[in-house]
Amino acid sequence: MPRHSSTQPTEVELEILRTLWDHGQATARQIHDAISVDRETNYSTTVKMLAVMYEKSLVKRDDSIRPILFRAAASQKKTQTKLLKGVMQKVYDGSVGSLVMQALSSKKATKEELAEIRELIEKLEEGQK
Image 1 (tube, rainbow, N blue to C red):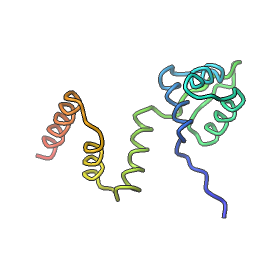
Image 2: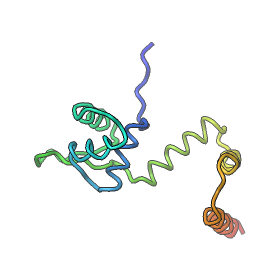
Image 3: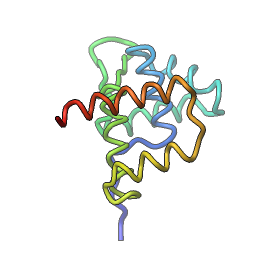
Image 4: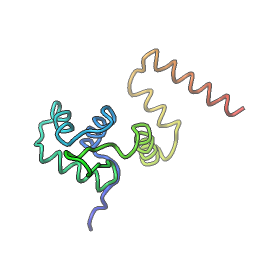
């Protein structure tokens, strides 16, 4: 049975998206140069990845100029929210509490992160009154 292609970004695709979120837009060469710092890959592989990402609607491209410019189709926050909702549903049966408890217990949070979390909880509690 053929596997359905996912619209979710893979690990490599997320690296490419991070580059685009950081730079706004970039050519295939600029993207390749950025990701090849941490990953040994061929330029042709980067171009192929961008084509796959275009088919998955993860990137948009401007074909009216040369070289072609790529940009992320969605913001980093929107993509992170979509991925997190998927993980929360698949792994934690949709439970926000279970997800947060696991996240907080799996890695020590900094004082600053804990302060931000407390502030967010207070804001959420204010909205429920």
